[in-house]
Length: 103
Image (cartoon, rainbow, N blue to C red; front, side, top):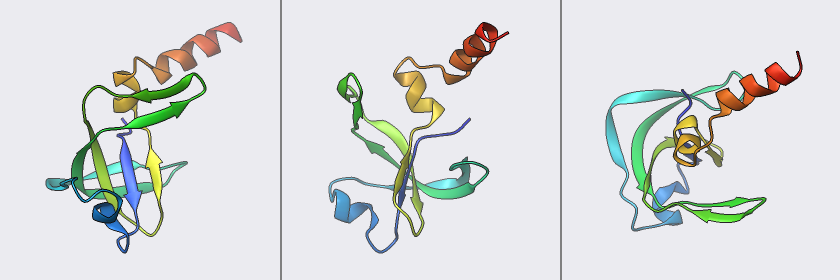
């Protein structure tokens, strides 16, 4: 399962984005799929309050979400299955339904 992750260049880091956020070291680094067949290793985790902009308008989650923090020379936010399930979105089920309709 792809987990939600925030990719930040080490030079900017999470503290420059929001100095109040505390990232915690993971006991065991987490391997996560980034995009296509690219994999990343996360060694930190943080609880973030997210505001997601959608076609229906902005959605602010009621509680903080666990997000993997990855030091990488890039900046991106990966919406993982864990966050999608929190929003009530089951991508696998939607793909199954789409496949059934095209048969």
